[in-house]
Length: 292
Ligand SMILES: Nc1ncnc2c1ncn2[C@@H]1O[C@H](COP(=O)(O)OP(=O)(O)OP(=O)(O)O)[C@@H](O)[C@H]1O
Ligand SMILES: [Mg+2]
Image (cartoon, rainbow, N blue to C red; front, side, top):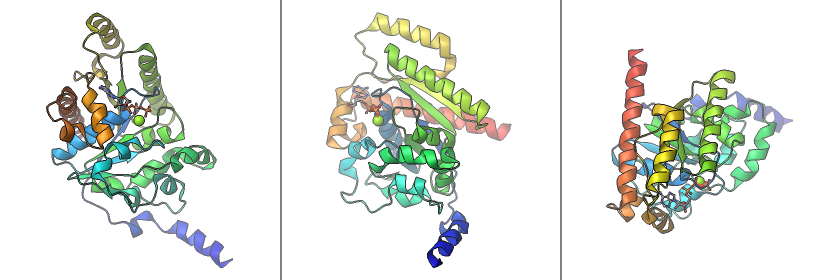
C-alpha cells in the first residue's frame, strides 16, 4: 500500500522541481527518413560535431537501437558511461528528463546519449502508453533549455520512436541518396510530416532534403534525378550535397568525426558546407518567427 501511494505521489512531482532550467532554447532537429542506410547517422553525427565546433551547445540523441551514433564517436566517449538509457526515460511515468541520459564527450560543446539496445523493446512497449507520441517531447521540455541544438538520429522506419522524434522536433532534415527506393522513402516522410501538421496539429517544418552518397561518376543519372527532385520538392532540396567519401565510413570505424579523422577530405568539406547551410536556414526561420 505504502509503495502504491508513494508511486502515485511521485507522478505528481513536476519535472521542474527536479531539474534546473537552463537559459537556452534549443532548435530540435530530427534526422529522419523511412529508408535505411542513406546516411542519417553519418549526417547526424557530423552535423552535431560541426555545429559544436562553432560554439553551439549540442545534444546528439541516438533513438536507434543500433547505437551507431555512439559507435561513430566511440573514441571520444567514456567506455563505461554512467547514464540512464533513453528507453528507460521514455517509459518512466515519473516524467524524467533526457538530461539524465546525456553524457559529455571529449568534443567541446557536444553531449551524446549512449547506445541503448533497450530501444528495440521500447518501440513495442510504447504502444501501450497513453500519449505515446509525446514522451520524447516531454523529456526534452527542460533538457532543451540547456542546449542550442538537439539533433535526433532516428531509426529507419515510421514507428513509435520516429513519431516521438517528429513530435518533439521543430524541424526535420531528410537525407536521401539518389536511388528510387530512397527517394520514395523521403517522399513518404514528407507525407508523414504533412499528416502530423494536419492531424496532430504539430507545426513540424521540413528544414530540407539533403542528397547523400552522390557518386560523381554518374553525372547524367544524377542530373536527371536531381532535376526531378527539384521539380517535385523545390527549395526543400538543400544545395549542399554529400558526395561519396570513403573517409566517412573509415572515420566511423575509428570512432571519430570526419573532421578529426580527415579534415581535408571531401566528406569533411561537404559536411562543413551542409552545416553552414543548415545553420543559415535555422537562423533565417528564427528571424522570420521573431519578425512575425
Ligand atoms: N557520403 C558517403 N560516402 C560513403 N559512405 C557513406 C556516406 N554516407 C554514409 N556512408 C556509409 O554508408 C553506411 C550507412 O550510413 P549511415 O549509417 O549513416 O546510414 P543510416 O541511414 O543511418 O542507416 P540506418 O538506416 O541503418 O540507420 C555507413 O557504413 C556509412 O559509413
Ligand atoms: Mg542510422
